[in-house]
Image (cartoon, rainbow, N blue to C red):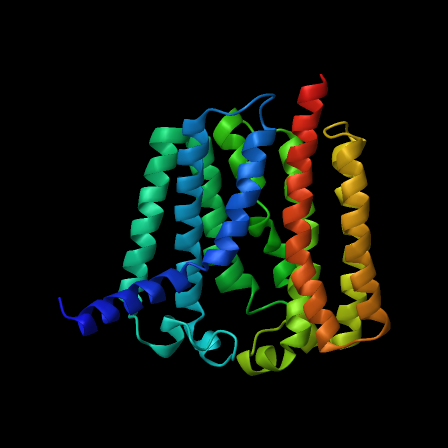
Length: 299
């Protein structure tokens, strides 16, 4: 194979990888792993973790690929997404469908045969919720798209819990609730400083349909709700004082960013909130796990 052919092949693989939104997938899988380790008093079986992560990652990647295919015309109008292969037409629809079908099919087999049917069906429902219900129905038709459709994106902790415990108790749904309430301020902060992009896209994102000030208020209100919801694992005795302290500090900083955005809007502050929201979710879920292990050591 010539150097040019090798470079072309590598470029195509990179384009396929971009369609799976690896950064978003990594955060989703991380939350699923936290659910796995919280589901049992000790360490979960390594097989459940490895195969659960693989299956969940594959189905998440498949859903994101379908999302890119469905939104290729919208992506082409937005600066942030215009370089995607689907938006530029460098990868054909049948190729994306083939990629999604392969990833999704293998993921479902892995979950069904090597994990458990409950996890497979929950993950498949999440796939349908994101790739079809959110992308096709909600996102182009309602400004509350990210609120209603956020449930699909909030499911990873429940998927991870199911992979290890073969059940989804109330504790798992508390983790889902945290991500569900976190999602609107996270995405609306992005939509604020990318408002011109969303105007060009034609999508009814909240800043476009209801204005910047209304969006700032909604972000602040959801941030208050997130502060309260983040304390629930302590309130129901799922986690202890170390987690509570971390949740208060992390959620307090989130609320501070939201308040600053509400008081004096700037694109820079919206970017700061968006970036912090990613750090926030990662650290909060890490605190859940660390507190869980501290509790086991002290028991």
